[in-house]
Length: 411
Image (tube, rainbow, N blue to C red):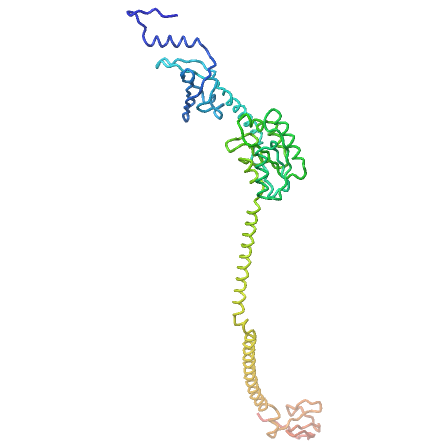
């Protein structure tokens, strides 16, 4: 209802701004569709500012929302995306500015589809299906490769031709299935399970030659992702091109950017391997040759030593040393014997000089009783006792005569 005003009774600007705010508050929360033309996310701020535009009428509105509201769709919403916003109009009285306070943001069309895929991606990641620790290494040279692809597709041709060009003896077990449409998911799942159960298949390649987001939806199906996660055989995802990232790429043991890249990653190049073998042989030959050269130089140095060049020289030198030691020992022993002989001669001379026999040769005699005891005193001899007198040349018997008077031995 319009306010009653006249030129003489106008309304102040502040009152007009408050009236406009009151009228806008009556509108309540509404759903608004438009295109995001500007996003302002200031670091540390709790509010995100958007500009929502209607291209058909060239009209724009400012939108504000809490960061938590925007973060729910931040991965799939960017500038230029069409969205539906549940918001309440707000009037900022100090500046006289109209804006929308958003409580929910939903992408429209492809954006909505990407948002659902993003939620599924987060859920599967939380279960650990995309963890690097569960991914298996591919065999160096698979004997049999399982291939799941469309019938007579460019992806099949790229994988087969590039793999056989790299390794002509490689063998394939191909399963042609629909790769888009409503029948794609069950057929791909059945083919993957069949190849996983095949005892000769060493690795499985799931290939498709790119396409739109809608075309690649079967390869983001939750059931297919869980089937690949449960496979015992390593799985290689070769879906689309470099920008395409279906969920199969995240759960597979190896992601190839294209089917051609998958063939190069799974099958080694025979030319490269032969070159590597040749380089390894040359390196081994150089190592063995260097080792032999080093040992030959060591052997030559050992043979050049005097003891090896003239082995008898050491024996001769030791023989000369032994001869010298023997001669020295003989001289030393001779000197010792000569000295001992001289000492013995001197000792013998002293013994002879001091022996009783020498005294007897000077004219003395030794008297002995019959029992051999030496007569030392005159009173030891009985009258008429027969004694033996021992002189230098022998002995003879004597008889003691009785003495009328005692003879006193000289002092």
